[in-house]
Length: 88
Image (cartoon, rainbow, N blue to C red; front, side, top):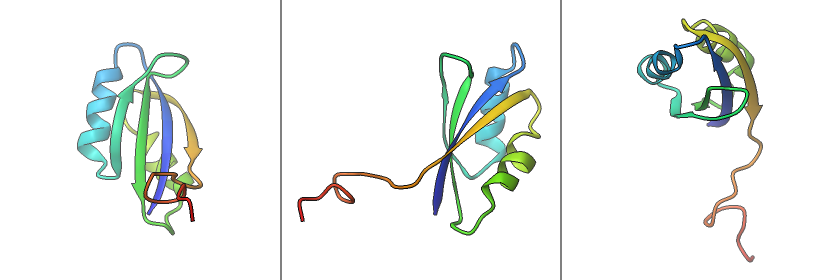
């Protein structure tokens, strides 16, 4: 599976509507957080390893009502206590 995050800027007053749509309509959405700063939401997605992330974001995320802008962050490695940080 491929993990990535999308910062989402919403139309004024639509943040909770957009968050609900992400969770309800996209099974690939793992977590959706409200955040401070330039964006309103941070959503974590998980797709198949061979999925086209750009197409997913432009066709499935950006088309949801209430979204003004996005910024996508691709993940390279996940470092956890059981993988990637061991003392081998």
